[in-house]
Length: 286
Image (cartoon, rainbow, N blue to C red; front, side, top):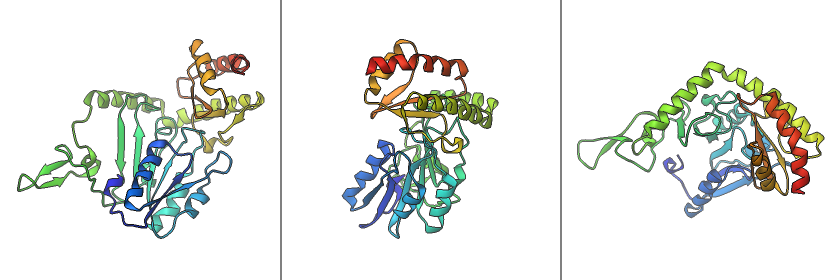
């Protein structure tokens, strides 16, 4: 997506210092084009929309955020951010990898959406790109392949395909697409609103219990400010993950924090089990 922008010296891009590395690194790469990356520092563990908007100016070309943070579990108000950026002609790129499949996602609010299919969509290593042609009509990716365009009147000419397929240079992984279609049907039958309510309720129970254990929880309390990820910091995060895995309790740990995720298939017994074992893990981990 970044390759489609006509960058000019002095342009800038805005994101949070807590954002996922793939986006931050892609922005940093633009330094070779004399494009500044503005990393907005959080307030505590929370990204503030006002701070993101305040970092933008007349030379800001794009803002990149995650609807739900992989690191803290915070859910951003994408509608409010979109309303602030769209009148200024600033593109909004939203990573919905930790939102799509567990809470509602409104693709009309962003100009571009990316997502990892193997997270909450219950798929495999499928990458998803959505392009909002209504809000951002021009999108011409630099990388062109046989599957993203049709040959023009000469062998060296081409016409880009309509829609986001113009970014698909080669064959899609058909098996992954078929599996994703089945997963989407499964999630759709349950209902995303029902899944969200389930995750908010159990996530709230889990969050409260982690606080009672004296842990530094980085996930906001309000349901509309979180989704399925409930996170806390710990100096021995990797050790906690290993201890839990010995009991077939799967959590994720990196960057000094532990992430516990509540999806449709997680129930009250799962929450009770991890909370029953966690005090022992904390003692063993020191």
